[in-house]
Image 1: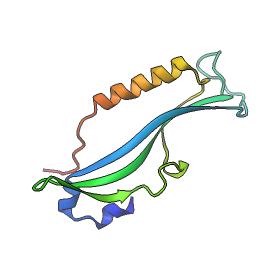
Image 2: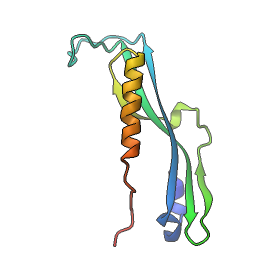
Image 3: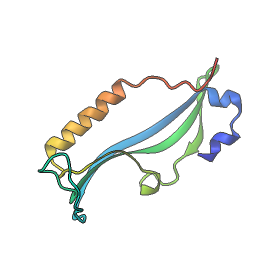
Image 4: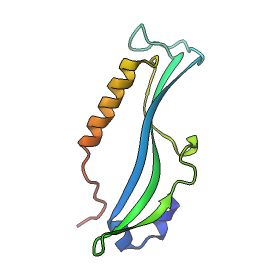
Length: 118
């Protein structure tokens, strides 16, 4: 994000990135002749878990007001979509539930990311 280069040091201190994430399966891909970990897996079916940035906010700690620094102009476009995990597996209710639970668990255990060096 080029917008970061135009922010002051004060603005860089309190940024919040708002994202969305999801998972989806696709099929009908060419199968390649390489060995996968599980004999039952096939690269004909791909299950993607991905993340999309929506907004970058600056929070003024004195007034507690937020200012939109950057907003995704195309939140549904694959251009801004970044993979979290790619699996050679057929989409199923069990796989979707397992993957969703894993990501939700990771979200609950996130730590604040501090870019300031003391």
